[in-house]
Length: 445
Ligand code: GLC
Image (cartoon, rainbow, N blue to C red):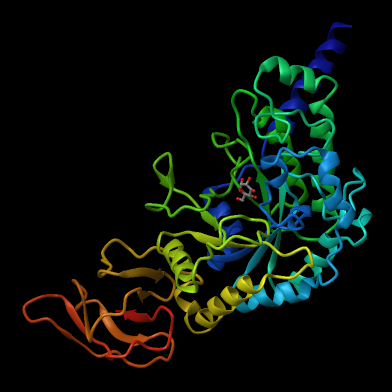
């Protein structure tokens, strides 16, 4: 009897610890797993759901404290008749983007695929189609790597407990307790695992997943609420090469995340963790909100958006730039204009982006410029944010340079050494070349 109990207990212990364990990997293996992503530098985020109909922020249900009943009209009206993911994919590709992440489910809880575990899905709306299926096929056909965003938060699921980020949030613990009676987070955790299993099993290779987001603390939610470790382990077991964001509240867990996600901010320098530089990607919007927002007029200009991209690469990071399609299923004209402008620039200048990173410290950026560097080809790229008058000086470079040209037209840029120094004086045309941000390509010795 005793030995039986012992065996039972040790099997239990063993399986529990196995369950909690994430696949081990060396630093080099991780670098290799993430290589395509690191070299891509530029991806498209897509926020699409029922919130495209009210067209006033993807948090509209929360902001206006709507109930499920009040929000239901958007489900009943959802019919994006112009949805053509091949068009989306073509626009992403022409903009120079190499990967894409679509909200399979956002905080509102609405699912863009034919999930077995809910009725709250696109196939049950007048539209009736499995959006995820069409999306993965279309973007793959254009050669982009495909990813999902999956919201941990769920403002529709009946077992998801009301918390401080919920549309029905309260201001006292007793009110929370009363409202949450009968809600069972165990069931919700099961639901998430089932859905993640569906998404990572039924749609082929998925290259990246965004879990969003944790907010531990009073009336908040964190790793215990999501069962983050098991969710992540499931993810990695179904898609061993997948790249995972850092919002599962597993910062301090080995293998608990792959990259960090500064949102709508400009980082001061390459982000670090425990004194080491870490992979990072900033996600940014065109105008402020993630979902389609008709009356938002704070759209960034093409030059600002390109600067965001170059800036990120100059500090070793990626840019995930968001589009919020309309409820007809199209990209708003302002988004189209900007993607086009970025594509025009990328067509001639992407060599300063793909495969590039922060320049070694020995190279100092002249005023109003951003540097990127390709460690394989050993070329340095100087991005001219403000076009100089005739000349620009680059410090301490005379002994390092073999040749300099404009990147967009491969026209030579002549230079001479400033007498008695190691500085280079470059001779530029008076007229700014017809490029939003001109780039000089420096071939190093
Ligand atoms: C935030 C928001 C969300 C958006 C996300 C993108 O966490 O809750 O609306 O999807 O950021 O990073």
